[in-house]
Image: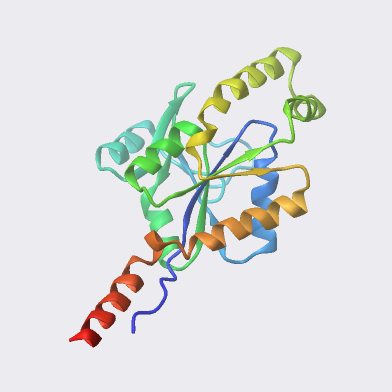
Length: 211
């Protein structure tokens, strides 16, 4: 009999700047051993302390454009003169190994991936409210009031796309939020679309028994 499909789930996690999605990703990886965080490729130069294959896969602009031409990326975008994208090879190899792969990307990239791979799970991380979001951005102490205002305006624009996601998680308590996200991803393993072969095999056995 066909076994339950144990291939990993491809999950895109998005959220406003200041929603705490980076912290959430770190906790998910710390608390559970079934996840792999996708590593992006970029055409920009490495910054101090950044490592090849850990922080990013660093490419020249020409190498990145070849990757685009050869359809080697799940999604890509150009930002402030540099390319950023998600290499297919790394993601698919981890999925085949049984890891649930997390992509922490923005709405534009999420929609690109959903269009190519409809079974992708989309989760949006939200703060408890707009005032809390502004408090978190201000509390960082690393950005000017002008930058904070721009981030708040961008969050307002991004909020128009939240309904395109499958789930939201509200990051008001990191422990609770981590458990919720883990539960959502693990439940996705048992949706019919992710168990199509198992369903097909059982259906065939039932039909054979009727003959």
